[in-house]
Length: 115
Length: 110
Image 1 (spheres, each protein chain N blue to C red):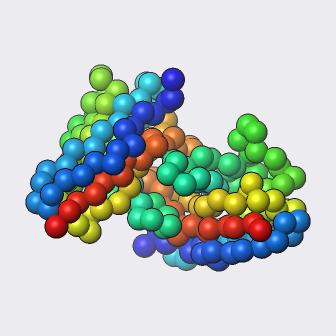
Image 2 (image 1 turned 30 degrees about the vertical axis):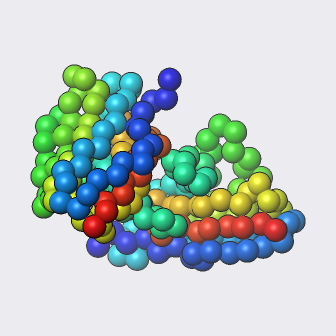
Protein backbone atom coordinates (compact mmCIF):
# COMPACT_ATOMS: atom_id res chain seq x y z
CA UNK A 1 0.00 0.00 0.00
CA UNK A 2 0.87 3.72 -0.10
CA UNK A 3 2.18 3.79 -3.65
CA UNK A 4 2.99 7.01 -5.47
CA UNK A 5 3.28 6.68 -9.23
CA UNK A 6 5.46 9.30 -10.92
CA UNK A 7 5.64 9.96 -14.65
CA UNK A 8 7.57 10.35 -16.80
CA UNK A 9 10.61 8.56 -15.43
CA UNK A 10 12.86 10.51 -17.76
CA UNK A 11 12.41 13.34 -20.23
CA UNK A 12 14.62 15.32 -22.55
CA UNK A 13 13.43 18.71 -23.68
CA UNK A 14 14.75 21.72 -25.52
CA UNK A 15 15.60 24.98 -23.77
CA UNK A 16 12.62 27.26 -23.51
CA UNK A 17 9.99 24.55 -23.48
CA UNK A 18 7.87 23.41 -20.53
CA UNK A 19 7.74 19.99 -18.96
CA UNK A 20 5.03 18.55 -16.74
CA UNK A 21 5.71 15.87 -14.15
CA UNK A 22 2.82 13.97 -12.58
CA UNK A 23 2.57 12.18 -9.27
CA UNK A 24 -0.45 10.06 -8.48
CA UNK A 25 -1.25 8.35 -5.21
CA UNK A 26 -2.63 4.99 -6.29
CA UNK A 27 -4.11 3.48 -3.15
CA UNK A 28 -4.49 6.37 -0.75
CA UNK A 29 -5.46 10.00 -0.71
CA UNK A 30 -2.54 12.40 -0.65
CA UNK A 31 -3.70 15.69 0.79
CA UNK A 32 -0.08 16.83 0.84
CA UNK A 33 2.66 16.26 -1.70
CA UNK A 34 6.28 17.28 -1.30
CA UNK A 35 8.41 18.02 -4.35
CA UNK A 36 12.17 17.50 -4.16
CA UNK A 37 15.10 18.07 -6.43
CA UNK A 38 18.25 16.01 -6.31
CA UNK A 39 21.54 16.75 -8.02
CA UNK A 40 24.05 13.95 -8.70
CA UNK A 41 25.61 12.58 -5.52
CA UNK A 42 23.69 15.06 -3.42
CA UNK A 43 20.76 14.74 -1.09
CA UNK A 44 17.16 15.69 -1.70
CA UNK A 45 16.35 19.37 -1.49
CA UNK A 46 12.75 20.29 -0.77
CA UNK A 47 11.39 22.64 -3.41
CA UNK A 48 7.77 23.05 -2.38
CA UNK A 49 4.86 21.58 -0.51
CA UNK A 50 1.50 21.28 -2.22
CA UNK A 51 -1.82 20.83 -0.49
CA UNK A 52 -4.95 19.70 -2.25
CA UNK A 53 -7.10 22.66 -3.18
CA UNK A 54 -4.72 25.39 -2.09
CA UNK A 55 -1.60 27.17 -3.29
CA UNK A 56 1.74 25.47 -2.89
CA UNK A 57 4.28 26.65 -0.35
CA UNK A 58 7.70 27.18 -1.88
CA UNK A 59 11.03 26.95 -0.12
CA UNK A 60 13.28 29.96 -0.05
CA UNK A 61 15.10 30.46 -3.33
CA UNK A 62 12.68 28.40 -5.43
CA UNK A 63 11.02 30.40 -8.22
CA UNK A 64 7.27 30.06 -8.04
CA UNK A 65 6.73 31.14 -11.62
CA UNK A 66 9.25 28.69 -12.92
CA UNK A 67 8.14 25.63 -10.99
CA UNK A 68 4.36 25.57 -11.15
CA UNK A 69 2.70 23.14 -8.80
CA UNK A 70 -0.90 22.07 -9.02
CA UNK A 71 -2.67 19.78 -6.57
CA UNK A 72 -6.21 19.78 -7.88
CA UNK A 73 -7.29 16.43 -6.48
CA UNK A 74 -6.48 14.11 -3.60
CA UNK A 75 -4.71 11.71 -5.93
CA UNK A 76 -2.83 13.95 -8.35
CA UNK A 77 -0.15 16.60 -7.98
CA UNK A 78 1.81 18.04 -10.90
CA UNK A 79 5.02 20.00 -11.23
CA UNK A 80 5.54 22.00 -14.41
CA UNK A 81 9.00 23.31 -15.17
CA UNK A 82 8.37 26.35 -17.36
CA UNK A 83 10.82 27.78 -19.88
CA UNK A 84 13.32 25.11 -18.97
CA UNK A 85 17.03 25.80 -19.12
CA UNK A 86 20.00 23.41 -18.93
CA UNK A 87 20.55 24.35 -15.28
CA UNK A 88 17.09 22.91 -14.53
CA UNK A 89 18.40 19.47 -15.49
CA UNK A 90 18.05 17.37 -12.38
CA UNK A 91 16.25 14.48 -10.73
CA UNK A 92 12.81 15.49 -9.46
CA UNK A 93 11.02 13.37 -6.86
CA UNK A 94 7.62 13.67 -5.23
CA UNK A 95 6.67 12.33 -1.83
CA UNK A 96 3.50 12.03 0.21
CA UNK A 97 2.95 11.25 3.88
CA UNK A 98 1.73 7.73 4.41
CA UNK A 99 -1.69 7.31 5.94
CA UNK A 100 -1.42 6.89 9.68
CA UNK A 101 1.70 9.02 9.79
CA UNK A 102 4.04 6.11 9.20
CA UNK A 103 6.72 7.89 7.25
CA UNK A 104 6.59 9.11 3.71
CA UNK A 105 6.36 7.32 0.38
CA UNK A 106 8.27 8.51 -2.65
CA UNK A 107 7.67 8.42 -6.36
CA UNK A 108 10.26 6.77 -8.57
CA UNK A 109 11.63 10.10 -9.72
CA UNK A 110 11.88 11.96 -13.03
CA UNK A 111 15.21 12.63 -14.64
CA UNK A 112 14.94 15.87 -16.60
CA UNK A 113 17.58 16.78 -19.15
CA UNK A 114 17.30 20.15 -20.85
CA UNK A 115 19.35 20.52 -24.02
CA UNK B 1 26.28 23.78 10.36
CA UNK B 2 23.84 21.53 8.54
CA UNK B 3 20.80 20.34 10.42
CA UNK B 4 21.64 16.75 9.57
CA UNK B 5 25.17 15.44 9.04
CA UNK B 6 25.92 12.17 7.28
CA UNK B 7 29.18 10.80 5.98
CA UNK B 8 28.85 10.47 2.19
CA UNK B 9 31.21 7.48 2.00
CA UNK B 10 31.61 5.41 -0.03
CA UNK B 11 31.63 2.64 2.53
CA UNK B 12 32.99 -0.62 1.10
CA UNK B 13 32.43 -3.92 2.92
CA UNK B 14 32.64 -7.60 2.01
CA UNK B 15 29.50 -9.68 1.72
CA UNK B 16 28.29 -10.90 5.11
CA UNK B 17 29.72 -7.97 7.06
CA UNK B 18 27.76 -5.91 9.56
CA UNK B 19 27.28 -2.40 8.28
CA UNK B 20 26.87 0.62 10.52
CA UNK B 21 25.48 3.84 9.07
CA UNK B 22 25.09 6.98 11.15
CA UNK B 23 23.70 10.49 11.21
CA UNK B 24 23.94 13.31 13.67
CA UNK B 25 21.54 16.21 13.91
CA UNK B 26 21.26 19.54 15.66
CA UNK B 27 17.51 20.22 15.87
CA UNK B 28 16.18 18.88 19.18
CA UNK B 29 12.63 19.20 17.85
CA UNK B 30 13.09 16.21 15.54
CA UNK B 31 10.96 13.32 16.72
CA UNK B 32 10.48 11.14 13.65
CA UNK B 33 13.49 9.39 12.20
CA UNK B 34 13.65 7.44 8.99
CA UNK B 35 16.14 5.55 6.89
CA UNK B 36 15.69 5.36 3.15
CA UNK B 37 17.52 3.29 0.57
CA UNK B 38 18.00 4.77 -2.86
CA UNK B 39 19.27 2.87 -5.88
CA UNK B 40 20.78 4.82 -8.71
CA UNK B 41 18.22 6.86 -10.64
CA UNK B 42 15.36 5.65 -8.47
CA UNK B 43 13.23 7.27 -5.80
CA UNK B 44 14.04 6.61 -2.12
CA UNK B 45 12.48 3.54 -0.50
CA UNK B 46 11.52 3.60 3.17
CA UNK B 47 13.49 1.06 5.20
CA UNK B 48 12.92 2.00 8.82
CA UNK B 49 10.74 4.44 10.68
CA UNK B 50 11.25 5.30 14.34
CA UNK B 51 9.49 7.65 16.67
CA UNK B 52 11.56 9.20 19.48
CA UNK B 53 14.40 7.25 21.09
CA UNK B 54 14.96 3.52 21.10
CA UNK B 55 15.69 0.59 18.86
CA UNK B 56 13.67 -1.01 16.11
CA UNK B 57 14.46 -4.20 14.29
CA UNK B 58 13.13 -5.45 10.98
CA UNK B 59 14.80 -8.50 9.52
CA UNK B 60 18.46 -7.73 8.88
CA UNK B 61 17.97 -4.06 9.68
CA UNK B 62 18.14 -2.39 13.08
CA UNK B 63 17.56 1.32 13.63
CA UNK B 64 18.70 3.09 16.77
CA UNK B 65 17.86 6.58 17.93
CA UNK B 66 19.64 8.35 20.77
CA UNK B 67 17.94 11.69 21.18
CA UNK B 68 20.16 12.71 24.09
CA UNK B 69 23.17 12.52 21.78
CA UNK B 70 21.25 13.57 18.67
CA UNK B 71 22.58 10.48 16.93
CA UNK B 72 20.86 7.83 14.87
CA UNK B 73 22.18 4.61 13.39
CA UNK B 74 21.18 1.93 10.94
CA UNK B 75 22.77 -1.51 11.21
CA UNK B 76 22.62 -4.03 8.41
CA UNK B 77 23.48 -7.62 9.33
CA UNK B 78 24.73 -10.21 6.85
CA UNK B 79 25.11 -7.57 4.15
CA UNK B 80 24.46 -8.63 0.57
CA UNK B 81 25.63 -7.20 -2.76
CA UNK B 82 22.00 -6.22 -3.35
CA UNK B 83 22.30 -3.88 -0.36
CA UNK B 84 24.68 -1.72 -2.40
CA UNK B 85 22.89 1.61 -2.63
CA UNK B 86 22.82 5.05 -1.09
CA UNK B 87 21.30 5.19 2.38
CA UNK B 88 19.65 8.42 3.41
CA UNK B 89 18.68 9.35 6.92
CA UNK B 90 15.73 11.68 7.23
CA UNK B 91 13.94 13.28 10.12
CA UNK B 92 11.14 15.65 10.91
CA UNK B 93 9.67 17.53 13.83
CA UNK B 94 6.18 16.38 13.03
CA UNK B 95 4.20 15.47 9.97
CA UNK B 96 6.03 18.22 8.16
CA UNK B 97 8.84 18.40 5.69
CA UNK B 98 11.65 15.93 5.99
CA UNK B 99 15.23 17.02 6.43
CA UNK B 100 17.63 14.63 4.75
CA UNK B 101 21.24 13.75 5.30
CA UNK B 102 23.49 13.79 2.25
CA UNK B 103 23.32 9.99 2.00
CA UNK B 104 26.00 7.34 2.46
CA UNK B 105 26.95 5.24 -0.53
CA UNK B 106 27.38 1.60 0.46
CA UNK B 107 29.21 -0.94 -1.67
CA UNK B 108 28.97 -4.61 -0.70
CA UNK B 109 31.39 -6.78 -2.63
CA UNK B 110 30.76 -10.50 -3.25
